[in-house]
Amino acid sequence: MAQLQRIAIAPSQLQQGQISLTKEQQHYLARVLRLREGDRFIAMDGKGKWWLTQLAGEQGQVLEPLVVETELPVSITLMVALPKGNGFDEVVRCCTELGVTTIAPVLSDRTLLQPSPQKLERWRRIAAEAAEQSERAFVPTILEPVAFSSSLSFENSHKYICEARGNFPHLKDCLPHQISKVEGITNDQGQMTNDQGLIIAIGPEGGWTQQEIDSAIAAGFQGVSLGRRILRAVTAPVVALSLVSAACEV
Ligand code: SAM
Image 1 (cartoon, helix red, strand yellow):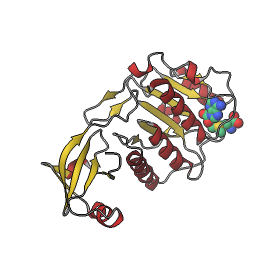
Image 2: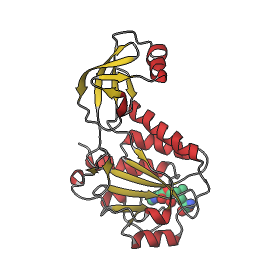
Image 3: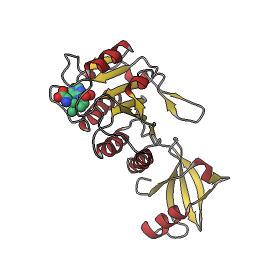
Image 4: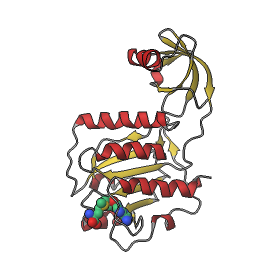
């Protein structure tokens, strides 16, 4: 099935086994991918469901549901202080490929970027494209940017704040022993919530202030290192996610 092209659809497009394709999707399938009447493709709703589908005019005819097992066994929320320029685009793309569940853009004391409302749409589009590309069953949720102080109230028992120069233990030594049993919980909308997953916070180019680290620790975050080198704000989330997936994937 790997060679079939995939397109993301909104759940509302599927009615009684028929997917009503948008004009853009019709254009993409017929003109860009050059599919013809009767050709097959995969439709994915970004919420865990995939269907083998056949092109039928302006519709997709669902042939059968497919089983997808590409998700990590643990849900991960990344709180990332917004880096300068377009750095966050790269964070969203790479972390989606690596299996992140939720990304919370955070405005910290040293954040330089004030994102425009269009940015959020752009990040969500990048997440959907990266999820298609990496054959994810779920498209990660990209939350509205929040102030660092509000993000501290995320409820969870496995919360980590990455600090480049603190004398903190390595993240790999702080992850729960039975990490794949630290499952996320699915809410009414079918989204994973992080009541029991992991939360990992990464700072901006200028790093966290001491006050931010202190208040995170007071809110139950554990300070962690990602190794002895100073990583760029865009590299650090990728390293953190790679460590988690190495610990929990078989
Ligand atoms: N300007 C800061 C300094 O010189 O200490 C470095 C900030 S770093 C470019 C951006 C963020 O990536 C940090 O706030 C931290 O969250 C994370 N980070 C980078 N390297 C790290 C490391 N070795 N261990 C833990 N976190 C790291």
